[in-house]
Amino acid sequence: MEVRTRSKRAHFSIVDPLESVDIKKQEKLKRLCDIYLNFARHKIKSLKVNCVRIDIICITIDESGNAAVKHHKNAVM
View (spheres, rainbow, N blue to C red):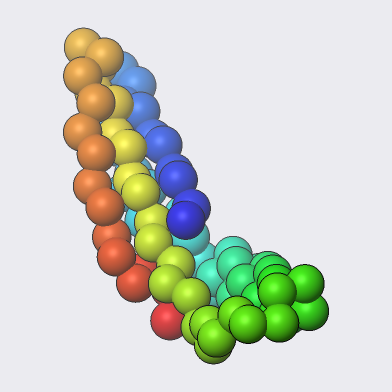
């Protein structure tokens, strides 16, 4: 799971937090998942998981301090 937060500053629009997870970051998340799964399989012989789901949680905060949360399931393939 990756969590990204963006806030609105005076006279600037909010940039979508999802856009900040570029290809480079997605590849890094995939590599980390592979490392974790290899480690887990080594430690837990009965583990049968072959893949993981990578979600991204986006939080945007407006000028008043109100937060909006959006959950993107399977955001990284």
